Image 1 (cartoon, rainbow, N blue to C red):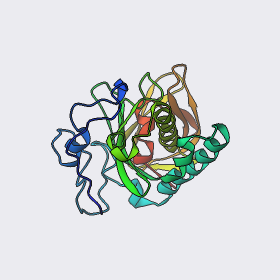
Image 2: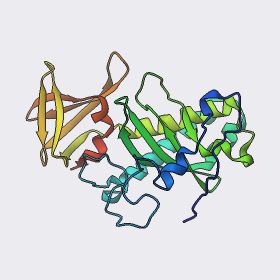
Image 3: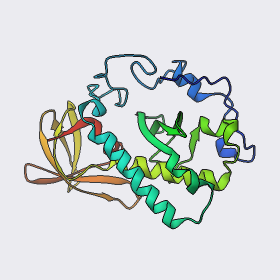
Length: 252
């Protein structure tokens, strides 16, 4: 595996205020200099059954190790969106490059100090791996602004504001759509998951119990939630728990 070295993290476009960073956040996460590392064994050869994708409250079950379907789902979403982009946008540099974006991996998600989700991920561009992050993925700003070492690479100085905005929206949609599970039966692999009842009451779903995903919707604040059934009763999985569903549940 090729290890990328980051000596600086100075973005190319001074007029892009949302791209500026004084220090390399990715350098800190790569070498464990931050109190919130990407996950157990990130960047090192470790037992592949240990998850670097789940939060600290999960039992470290790696959804990618359990089944290849998750990676296939991300690839399917990317292919579908590529087709939409080519037919929607006029010919431009981003459309010319879109087929070169591949192999997207969600490396780590966790709840930040604002009680929102930060999503760290990587992707291949022209055969080389790059790291990126969406801070406050489920915050007020939709889509949030992506930060990536790609924008400090001198080989891609042609990435202008229009290109950035389209890439930002493209990768956000891929990740957002991946979080939405298919309908069907799922088993809870977490000790307790909170479900919200029709009257607003909270029900604690214990580990090993099976639920049925009925559908997906968004609330008045445009926040997503899942509609599920358990023991013939209807419940919702809401807020941050929605984004951890695929880490906490295994499809039956």
